[in-house]
Length: 406
Image (cartoon, rainbow, N blue to C red):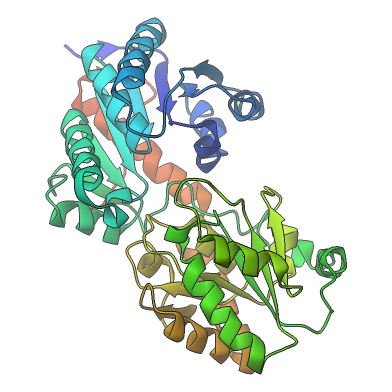
């Protein structure tokens, strides 16, 4: 006979608290449907801020982002103790390290539903022993999980192609994404239109300048080397153009010192640093660029589309799930500065094309990446997995068909 529980306990695990931001709004959605939600990550102010904002119980377990056998064993033991006290029915682990440790701890403690949510593919740009270790960790996490959810179809295809996960165990919810994009409220250009002037004044950008924007970590893997080379070529032809870079320089995978110096010394390049309040920054942009070498399903492209901005991105897994080439943006090969410059030039020269592609991007964000639709699909998947594990809840009905496996 199936176990009957009046309250289903759900535990999200991420390596660092910054990653919990991907889940904003989900806890409230699940609580309204009878879930008791917990969050676990390395300690930090962002963990407690998330717990307060989302009204969930927070659990701090120190985890190293890099591979570190000694600290990883300690983190696993601490995680096991916490999970035994929480007694979750579902452990939903995100990011590679938390995916590996979280699914292992969940299996050891007998958690019936173990989900590994794959957000990206760090092994793609790794080499040698590191690549082999990253791929081995993915295989183990996928084997320990009872379900693997990928944030995009192309990422799932990549996982299956490299035999990291079986096609039967893996799935993509709807069109992908973990949480959709709030195109109605937060990323709505009509709500922040008046902030365009204020943001440009803040950085000394003329009101009539065309602004290329980048949002993300300023690291080599995000294509900053190629972006700077493309920018230097465009600067000569379009001396009135400006570039707004939103995100921190990071010591892991740093850009070459020369590239950093060129960015910092250019008066038409504006380095914002880390700023979570991105809608006013998007409002000051005319084009968004993401020349990344690898992605899962980049939130910046969803946000740019919602903000009615055309995008130039690389034709890598994740980006190809968001950008419709020639309709909502332009896709170029990764590591190709010349193609990147040519694509940006198309938008610099044609304001009508920018308007057409931006409008199409917003329509797609509203249609295919609505947060409530994505959350409902995940809720239905939770119900299905609970029922399959023999956990009957009086408030749970048969799930609707929400998972597209491709």
